[in-house]
Length: 183
Image (tube, rainbow, N blue to C red):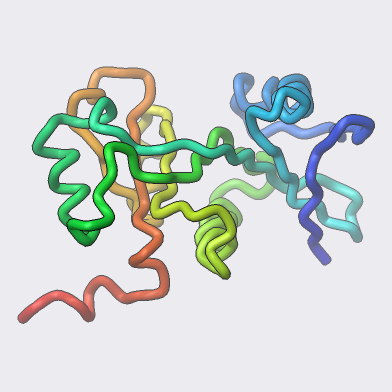
């Protein structure tokens, strides 16, 4: 049985490695500190039977602004929003970190977590966000992972950067994109 545990002061982060030293360091050192400064909230997926952390993710409030994308890219993004609801910044939740324990890599747990986050933020519209965004490591396997889970590039301006800004439109959650295309 799995449980979602919010990391807070006084909660000791158990041994965990996802194979990425930056993500591991965030989980062990920075997650609780960031929460204490109201910058993000980190949750772990905990296997109660094995008393082990299987994965973690952190989320924070953010927005998509025209600064993130080219003018045409931002206008294309806004075109999916009714004209009267187009703002200079569009509300988003940011997945700041997502790590899956090395023993659970490539078994679908990361995709399950993204599905959970999509459902979590669309169910009763908890924070009033339209998009999920992520600064994905600019590595083929990471980019492919987010693309398989419905994320798209916000801009092409970051192709040579260490990370790429990707987004998911929560209004599309639960709809089969293939069934909505014209034949």
